[in-house]
Image 1 (tube, rainbow, N blue to C red):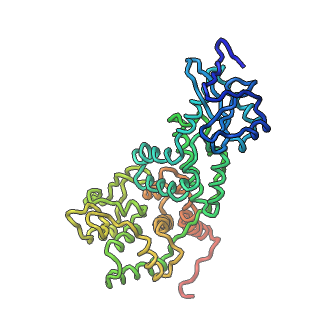
Image 2 (cartoon, rainbow, N blue to C red; image 1 turned 180 degrees about the horizontal axis):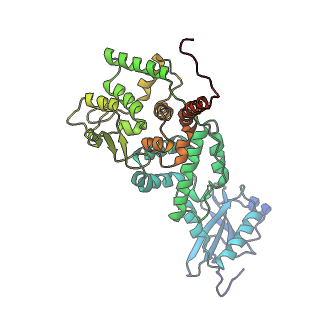
Length: 414
């Protein structure tokens, strides 16, 4: 088949053997290999379409052609067996048709082989986005999700070949941990948005679209006054007996007295502590820079912490010039002694908010204390904030009813 004008002209290479016949299942399987070198059988109908037979007996369909620039190309269509002679014939015809419109199958195949994998995208995402534009803690969380969940399943796949089914299967495999599954989905969605921006996928092709998140059950655990008392006794006992590091006890007390997030306390620097103005001036938090106002008990805790000249951190770790990294293990020991096995460290933040709400503080004030950007985040404490209001309304209504004579005053003498 000869193509003219803007069409490609397939070129038949010079071989030591020149054979030409219609490539069919019978002719392909009947082709005998040369023991010394490979040979090619060219199809008698489609110019440039051939079968390469290796001395080992391996048979591969090929196509040779010239580009519009006059460059000769050779591209492998596929191995006989996985594809049939008729399938290879259809592919050859399609590729020749593509070349007539300026396409280059060999170049396209080369691009496909060199296309980045999801592992490549993950590295670029971490270096150019997460480590540059996100908080350190968030970047570390992304790295953990990639290492534990995403890369083992999708890391070797080409970025431009991953589809919604691949994402859905990974998300489904994590269904027993809906929170982690949803965070993984959100991370992948961001990565694929960047892949589009960086030209690694076509626009609007994010495979995470229409993959529904799992419903997460928010667990709100608040410590009661009795539970707080038990925790206080255990912390005091650990301090007296020195069974826990002083930094562990100080960290837990600061979490209780400030409502801060764990990462905010563990990475707190001394130059962020403003005792004169009774506040912490955090340079970095989940919601950006913020001011945390310190109650007297928190100031007392900070005042008793020993400082080291070569350590900028308030909550010091065992290593020199470092902060405490793992509070989970000592917390498990402490909560067990206080019979609070179901209480997470983050529940100390919830408990701070619950005490504030029960004390009559408004939701906007509580949100400001906790550093919430969205009112909806603080709304979870609405039922607690309503309790003091109900009590106030009951007291006021009772006084009015008493004045109206609807409630008879009780005699002091009984």
